[in-house]
Amino acid sequence: MRITVCLTDTRPEAWVSGLRAALPGVEVDVWAPGAPPADHAVVWAPPQAFIDQQPALRGLFNIGAGVDALLRLALPPQTRIVRLDDAGMSVQMAEYVCHALIRHFREFDGYAADAREARWGYRKPLSRRDFPVGVMGLGALGERVARTVAQFDFPVNGWSRTPKPIDGIRGFAGAENFDAFLAASRVLVCLLPLTPDTRGIMRHETLMKLHGGRPGGYVINVARGAHLVEADLIPLLDAGQLAGAALDVFETEPLPPAHPFWRHPKIEVTPHASARTLREESIAQIAGKIRAVEAGAGFDTLAGVVDARRGY
Image (tube, rainbow, N blue to C red; front, side):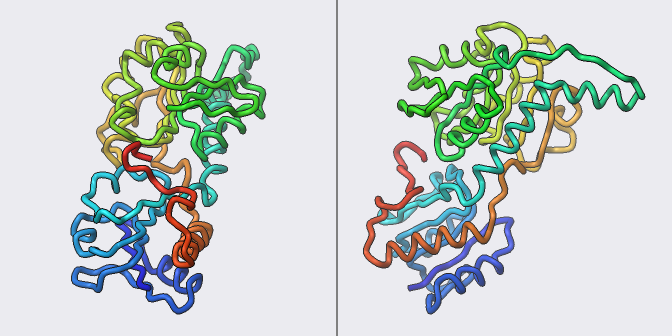
């Protein structure tokens, strides 16, 4: 069995050594043009040229949760895409979302501004019941975020393509219930996979429906930059319809220095840092799945196998 590692913008050496240790006797190498074809590949944003040299590729194991870049490739018909189903990312995502939510709810930015002026400020406490949080996308990451936010006693709504009951979370499902979900939520958290149906889902039309159309909505995007129509956000912030946004992902990354998001006082920018891939946990998960396949398990028995028709 041969495993090839092809990681764009990520140093592959530690992944290769980790996979060799986890899979003794298996040939594991970094891809180079002209290298022998592989049975399985561990990848991040591989070029089409890599895929074109893998006619017998069975498993394409992504080192992240988002697989939109892989779905744009022309793959051999037998190749199955397998994403990380957690590997330590869900707790990081929950930390990030709760930090952004609580920072906004508790008005910590205002206190920080007071401190810079040596001013002993006072703000009237707000009520959590007035800040229902809507989580779009209830996969492994979204469910963990929704459950964690609920631990802070915020009302939590969840929206997904199909119904997904979660204790303590008010569920909404399908396009027919999307407007009701927006109206019931003041804080909108995006954890959706990027598909043709979800691209641009946060645009003027939908953001105006947040919080029942009342001012004061807040946006947290930790999924993909293309979920947000960037040109629609600043006008809503400047008009007071939205109170702010915490953005970790963008249409163009790195975010260009001249982009207005950097300097807008109501936008918090972080550099796609909400959930980093944890290498050791990821290698253990990928190696376990490869062992299962080689022992005769079908790909459909594995967690994280992507349905290309749905896009996740």
